[in-house]
Image 1 (cartoon, rainbow, N blue to C red):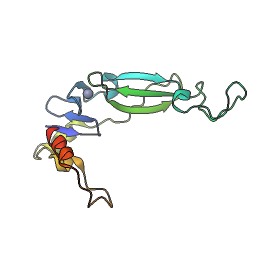
Image 2: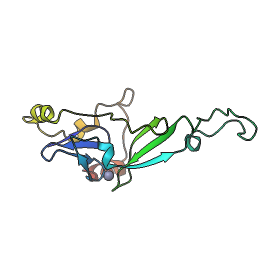
Image 3: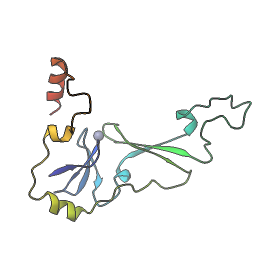
Image 4: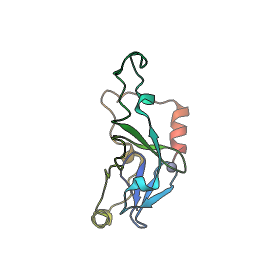
Length: 145
Ligand SMILES: [Zn+2]
């Protein structure tokens, strides 16, 4: 049984593995932080939040100070989907943001059926009830299985 945990991560309860929901890559043991199985790209925050003022003329430019913050981007090593981003002081270890009781999850899901595509998609957004997709979009969505 695979249980979706985020938009891009699921846990395979039978094998106790974090899995990429995009490419089914085995990210790592579900009892360990999933980030240990991902690629990390440490970014200078000024690449993401460009200075508004000329950094040659001003010390403070409205861009984050790279001595105080860096941006960690986490990617699936198989399909390169960006799975998580976090802002941390330089030298700070990645945050353990999800730690599930795997035995309790197994107990919760032992008598449940896997979620179908409609349940995974969630409810329609407000005001979007009359939104219609083209046949091409419908075919592409069905092809994703
Ligand atoms: Zn992947």
